[in-house]
Image (tube, rainbow, N blue to C red):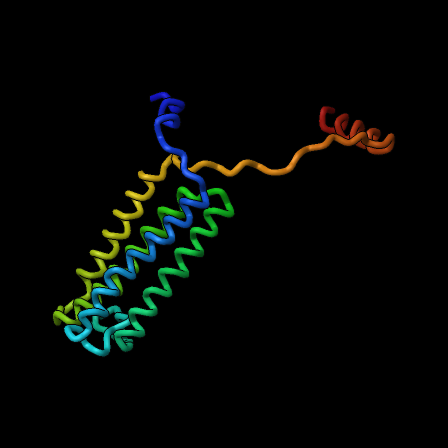
Length: 181
């Protein structure tokens, strides 16, 4: 397939807009279900697990508001970190997909464990599997959606040639002779 035809048919998006949009989508992954849990908090236990051991039993607990707040904060911080790194290194295509997939995974894991405790599910295994699958699918879809569509920022700065002095020219000529010999 002709790559020029593909790039002409795809809308080019500015990197800043992709980073900001990805951040807001990442936050939506956690805020929307958290809002549902908060509005229906009477159906959920007041204390929920925040960490599970290798034996698939909870070994750390927190209040429901604290667990929801930690989840929102963790997603916001990791998304901002990965999107910032992606924007700064001009690798936003990869880092945006990573941020979105990780946000979906963390949200599914935390909120899934809250639902698991509320429904008296015996093991966290299915929730963990669902979180990994959801994260991978969201990350892959984000990658496919963004692939080749992020417009690179124009490189700034100019190059001005300088006239090397006689000594600099002599050293450069000497170094060139050493490399070619």
